[in-house]
Image 1 (cartoon, rainbow, N blue to C red):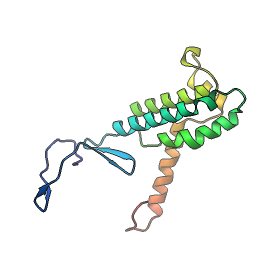
Image 2 (image 1 turned 45 degrees about the horizontal axis):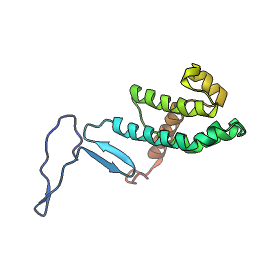
Image 3 (image 1 turned 180 degrees about the vertical axis):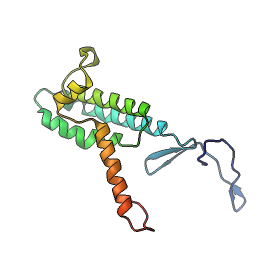
Image 4 (image 1 turned 90 degrees about the vertical axis):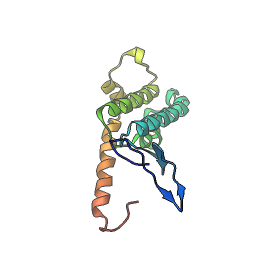
Amino acid sequence: MKVSRTPSKLKISIDGTPLKEVSEFKYLGSIFTEDERLNREIETRVEMANSVSYQLDPLLKHPNIPIETKTKLINSIFKPTLTWILTKSLERKITTCEIRCLSRAINKTRRDMIKNTTVREMVGKTPVLHYIQRQTIRWFGHLTRMAPRELAS
């Protein structure tokens, strides 16, 4: 796969065998596309987060489980699924997914017309976007402390 903003075909071969060129490549669980955009990666992560949210649904909706326990479930299972570097439209998708999950924890739906900030206050959570920013800063700090020729892990 060639990553570029201008489309063009590459002809690469190994021992006379041409390599197949692809527009999308999955490596270590992340999706890379030839146009350098993260839309496909974020869509996949939002789908995964929605799947996690639906699997947690019985626990999040259960009235006898304390909100503190529900918050711990969301922090440890749901939030890490969404972590990435984002554009504004991708931030909106992630926030929508997050609020959907948090609303389940307090047994509310969009029809209840509760503001996102109110939903977060009821659950006692900061936005997942803040978590993503902290994780990005932590990763940057990790990279800056590394030896010059050390591989990132």
